[in-house]
Length: 259
Ligand SMILES: C[S@@+](CC[C@H](N)C(=O)[O-])C[C@H]1O[C@@H](n2cnc3c(N)ncnc32)[C@H](O)[C@@H]1O
Image 1 (cartoon, protein in one colour):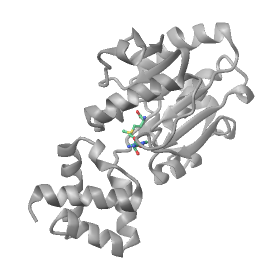
Image 2 (cartoon, rainbow, N blue to C red):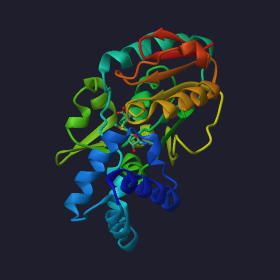
Image 3 (spheres, rainbow, N blue to C red):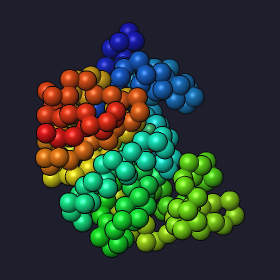
Image 4 (cartoon, rainbow, N blue to C red):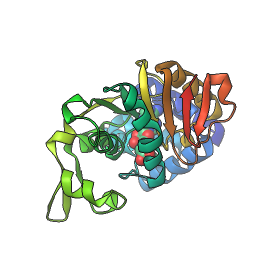
């Protein structure tokens, strides 16, 4: 089988087996990542690797854990989070005291917990509810535990670190109060339905992995999920062009408001 057919056959089989549509991820990047994985497991081609995945559950799990990149940290790109607080959330909270918020592709939870800690400066914790989703069950399990190393906390303001974390033997445990503000659920951005009426959708550092076709469809769906005046906050390399075709306007770089 030539290389093209091998990969096409692999992604078609993976879609049937897991529901994950790899054709919507940038091909060169995905192929590179998966080739290094299958070579490590001594497979000779994508389809050879597929056959091995079907025989060994651990291998399928390894593939599911590895086809995504799960890097995250609290206050990732700190200046953008300051802008979120000062220029987006504070004005929103002048008009209402409860916000509907979704952290999409949340990885190990640093992002939704960052939102919770920011909001806790203005609202009682009991009135904060954030939906946080990711395609990967393994990262969601870690997110629910809320245990982190020094690296993930390096950009977190000191007063938040002191207030919301307990330190023990090299690890930081997030407080139950903050944990209880976030509900984690498995959700595939490319397949599953979206809720609507969001005031804020934070979806950062995942668009970069998707093809243009997938990105356009996602911008459209995210715009429909926002209420009028709601904001989509994306990663710092993920500028959206042609915003008006999605019914969005750019209020600040990387923040898009529903018209
Ligand atoms: C690099 S992390 C970004 C984490 C966090 N948003 C941040 O910016 O720090 C990308 C995350 O996207 C998730 N992901 C990849 N494809 C997805 C999909 N189709 N639906 C939902 N999440 C997806 C991965 O599992 C991974 O946890």
